[in-house]
Image (cartoon, rainbow, N blue to C red; front, side, top):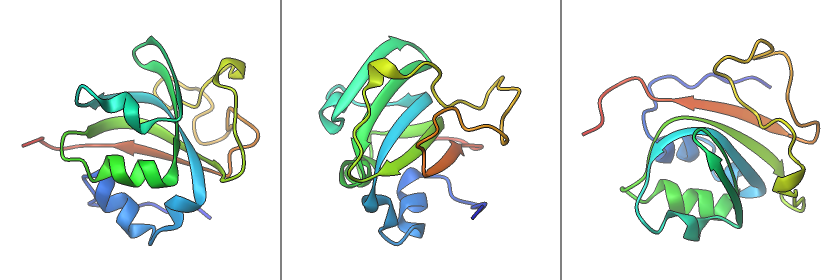
Length: 128
């Protein structure tokens, strides 16, 4: 199923449109352009800080919802990949994280075979 959401500007609004389904997955966040508070790593189960934007973050659906409700987070761009709730991936085993910008296979090839859903988020507007 492919769904295009229009007019959603905040992660909180996007997750609300899922009617709680986002909590049924674990999420890999990659290719992020975002602003965040000092304690942002507390939300994540695992992470690898390599260099922007090549950082990988593993988060539960519940924690993603909590993060979205924090007014100090703003996502401008990011690839959000959903995995089965019982799955745990080793971030060190990722050879190519999901990304869109500059990806010649964007829309055609999912970089990790066990992704159940992939959603790309971008903000086109002004942060207040």
